[in-house]
Length: 257
Image (tube, rainbow, N blue to C red):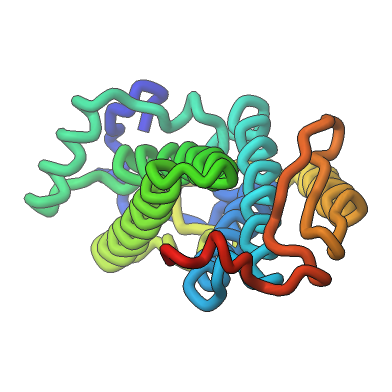
């Protein structure tokens, strides 16, 4: 796929000429799985705990960690390797519609990196977490409209992830190119010219250290007694649940629940 989302003639290449190539670098895979894990943890915690439970604070901490993951992925999307860069897969609505039409007819071209459908899914999975966290923080003002919007965005993210997994399965079945396992190994079958030269372990290590540092800063600024946290680098104070000494529920606030 070219930068404007048009398909190339790579689907006409002889599969016998395909070799194992590097496609997804380490920073891309690290941030992909970090975002997936944090979102899954946040959803499970939201489903299994009450907002007044001390355990619910971990739901909010997972959200704050997601913001850091998205920020790093945006940076890598601007300066990373070929298939990680936004410029390599961003495309207009026309390219998406053509791709979907070709897919329905079984004529979609094999892509080394993101196809137009995956490209829109990737962008959605970067934008939605930011909106989810923003509305989650606004819920602290006890504004019901933000709570409903927060839930709707979270379920919207679930729908995008489900669509992403369905598309992966369909693509893997049709093209037999290790699409599903490639986000673990970084490897796929393709033309040699489509591959990247390195997995970029140093940027991945830097990203891991930055995420660890952000997590440590959140832990340091968190007061378990009051359930409050001062956002690192700011004077913004967040309430991440009830304080341990004050119990799990405020009777006056729980009457309407």
